[in-house]
Length: 145
Image: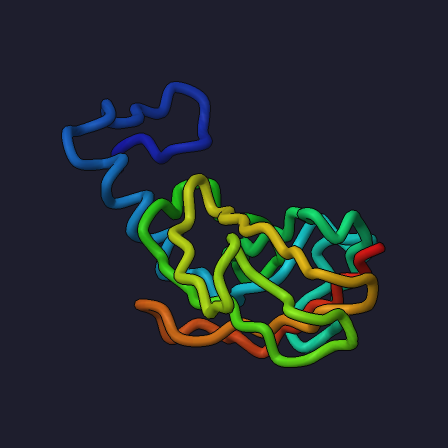
């Protein structure tokens, strides 16, 4: 009987070309949620409002890809997602200086956009679309002053 990994004297095969690609593929297949992050609530799961506050001239909002354990997938550099303005009390809200929606591409599992408005108030955001079927039920509220 040959040696087994984890036992004294066991032989472990050398890393082969393509192993990193297989690992990244496996990690990406375990992604489950697109969620807002970096607000006052951090990574709080899908469907739970994430609150931000900042200046009406521009407040950064981040979206990330997480796996079933709530960990950001740092290998994800290709998932796209649409962020939409869905309401709020601030007048003339914008995402990246446009009426929105904006399409964001993940870089190291995270993408960001800037929320602005002409007046103080709130801007409510949602996630939709993109090139993925991951859970997109998360929402954010940005209080700008």
